[in-house]
Length: 90
Image 1 (cartoon, rainbow, N blue to C red):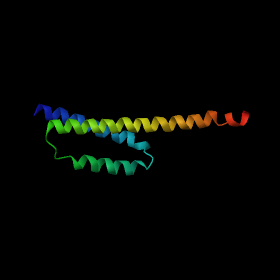
Image 2 (cartoon, rainbow, N blue to C red; image 1 turned 45 degrees about the horizontal axis):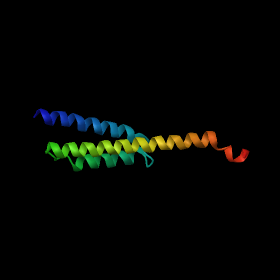
Image 3 (spheres, helix red, strand yellow; image 1 turned 135 degrees about the horizontal axis):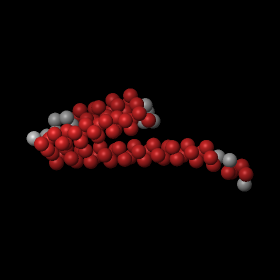
Image 4 (tube, rainbow, N blue to C red; image 1 turned 90 degrees about the horizontal axis):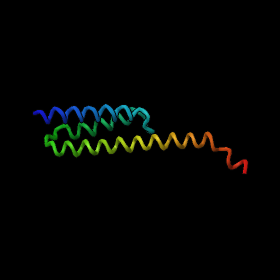
């Protein structure tokens, strides 16, 4: 029973973190929230701790991908802002 409680906390933490990251999702926060909720509800009946760990790992991978996407978007915006004149001066 103890294992289930710690996994539950991990799942809730993952959900909260993904929900937070979803605020800046390109298709909108509502779109992201809807799909996130569906993904978590689809797996709500999983009881096997090994399978739950695997699903948590997949969720953490998605989180890293989102962070990379946002970082890349910010990088491109900064690059455009500061280096857009370089072609004109050459």
